[in-house]
Length: 66
View 1 (spheres, rainbow, N blue to C red):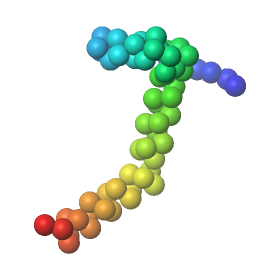
View 2 (view 1 turned 45 degrees about the horizontal axis):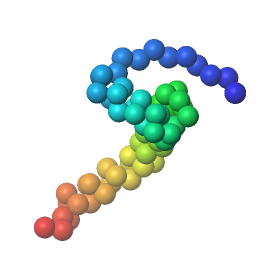
View 3 (view 1 turned 30 degrees about the horizontal axis):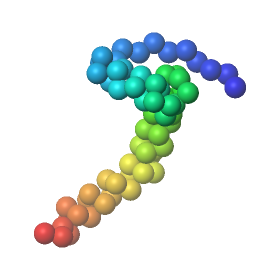
View 4 (view 1 turned 90 degrees about the horizontal axis):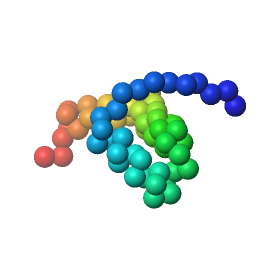
């Protein structure tokens, strides 16, 4: 698999929390953790999911449960 190297600026607190996850064995290394986090973000924000959520919000706005 071809990989791309990226450079990113992360807040120190986020970096520390991520490194703790790696040290506790939740990811084999920092790169794996970041790749998994990005993959999960992209999956949960796909166009289909986003469109569905917007449509749900519109339906609630038009016919709310309140």
